[in-house]
Image (cartoon, rainbow, N blue to C red):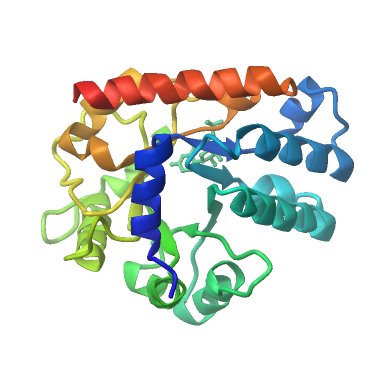
Length: 279
Ligand SMILES: O=c1ccn([C@@H]2O[C@H](COP(=O)(O)O)[C@@H](O)[C@H]2O)c(=O)[nH]1
């Protein structure tokens, strides 16, 4: 029986630190690496990132969009990247942000969370904005497979607030409601539950939100979006121990040189460790 994602993630964070590096093959990055904006360039880029960093980061987060734009051949590269990263000992959070009515959500869950699926990943990002309950098939299959979910709660982009800060009839914001659903999923789990939230590192003081969901908080926004590791304690308060900070372009722009990629990743990892230690 596979250990649940929350436990596997906690061990990986304790061993390697919490940094999550994104695999985001933007066309501008491919160009910056001297690669063509084609499937061969995509493959070279992804393989280089995995080979350079799989022994040191806790988590990779491939951004599915950058692979999907090449159609079936791009998806084949994504499959290979996921499998190589997992085989090398890193956890993989697939950033595909799926969300749909429950019956379709079940098919998305089969795609990423069924143990024998070609794109099986340790966790998947999902959108709850068709209603949290629509995610139930993914929650159920994740539990069965020992996988996890990261539910968009308070996203890093400035436009997110019009939906996520909207106040409901019960006085809670939509984002707070998502956090409360996740706290319920994770109740009683040790060392932490497998159902995480996406909460942007860019958002400033979030002390009006209860981030204590007994699960991981995936925090994009460091680097290219302007947040820094030293912002983390101020944004997350006591919940910072459960934060998995994501950096994509901030690391990837240092490629294709493997040593430079490792140095950039190690620098972010050290700064994050120091910031969390002060909290
Ligand atoms: O709220 C969110 C949710 C997801 N993302 C994703 O994270 C990375 C961030 O990349 P950077 O290059 O470090 O800015 C990217 O894949 C986004 O789709 C996010 O930024 N914010």
